[in-house]
Image (cartoon, rainbow, N blue to C red; front, side):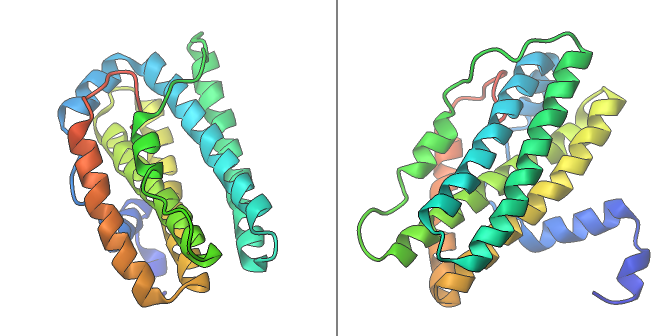
Length: 213
């Protein structure tokens, strides 16, 4: 990072980071933010469970690959951050006297996970697990950006700006970890394959007013 970049406003830094890392093939249907803002209780509840599942995924990877020191160290921090996000979303629900409710089935994540290849080397399986996690973070980042820019609640707008920046960092972390344990060229090629698949999944799913994804 150059000395000049330190003086950039936070919003400019976030936009630079987004241009660098978000490589999604398909943008979210613009109707989503309109209906999401009208059903903020459902969106917040679903978001809370997304953060809980993200923390659980990080824990699962640590348990599955305890010999990979960098992965354990970085995902330990990531898990703590995801859980803090869960707590913050829960606070937003409580402030509005809204219930958490029961978890919803996340069809988007279910479909993505079908493309984690089974068999082969442990490193190849790890690469797919890390890249699928990266794509979930990237899509969340994109959705948070829409909420930040368009949701009428100023407090929630600021909240989603902060989480947008965080999710962008998580995307980078997952891709970097994949390149730590697999050939970078293989990671880049597989990421392109999964980005295409992710776009097709988003296209195939209905626009829901009660889901973050």
